[in-house]
Length: 133
Ligand SMILES: [Zn+2]
Figure (cartoon, helix red, strand yellow):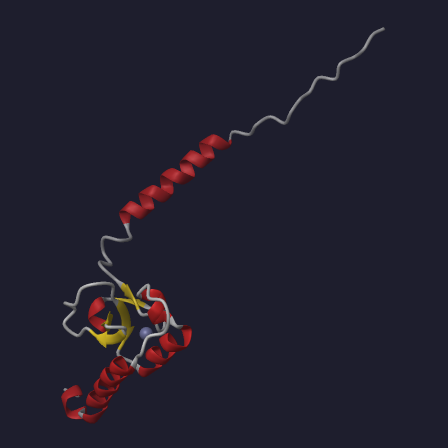
């Protein structure tokens, strides 16, 4: 009895390795070349999720279970970053972004931050002479 063995021929492995290696190489080179070094430190506004420089944002920390604006950026602990903008504040509140960003359980009172943002908005709107020229 003759049995013909069908030779198992698994599909030949394509020369993927080379391509993969090349792809990885390129991505590494690109990352090293452009990003990160030029942008510098950026923070994300927890209200609108825009990335911008810290000077555009207000730092907010938790003190005694309450959110407080850290205008001098000196308070210890985790900070959340927010535009001085009531829309961003409202967004952050609605999303409960403060407890999440600050790793705090439960809700946090935003009264102090709201006051601060409202005052800032009033100041900017109320003194147009300082803003123009
Ligand atoms: Zn924002």
